[in-house]
Length: 148
Image (cartoon, one colour):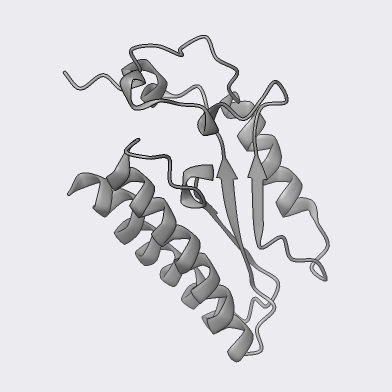
C-alpha cells in the first residue's frame, strides 16, 4: 500500500496541485518533473512486479497530464524522468549486483536540471537515462532481490 501511495497517489496529488497553482497564478511556462523508472517501460519477468506496475502507471499519468494541459492550451510542460538503476536505498536490498554499473543520485539531478534548462518552446516528454557502462536494469534477475 505504501508503494501505491508514494509512487502513484502522491504523484497525482502533487502534480495536480502544482498544475492548478500555476494556472491560478497565470504561470504558463511552468514545468512538472515526475521521477519514473526504466521499469515503467519494460517488464522484467517477475522482477519487482508491483513496483514495475506503479511505474507503468506513472508513464500513463504523465502522458495524461500533458494531454490535459494541451487541451487547456497551456504551455506548462510535464516530463517523465526515467532513470535506470540508481545508487539509492533500494540497491541495498539486492542480494547480488551491488557492484553493477549504476547511476548516482547526482546523475539523475543533472538530468532534471537539463530538462529544466530547455527553452519553453521545447518539451522533453520523457527522458530515459542509464549508466554508460550498460543498462543494468535490463539485466537484473529476480534472485538479486533480498526477500527477507
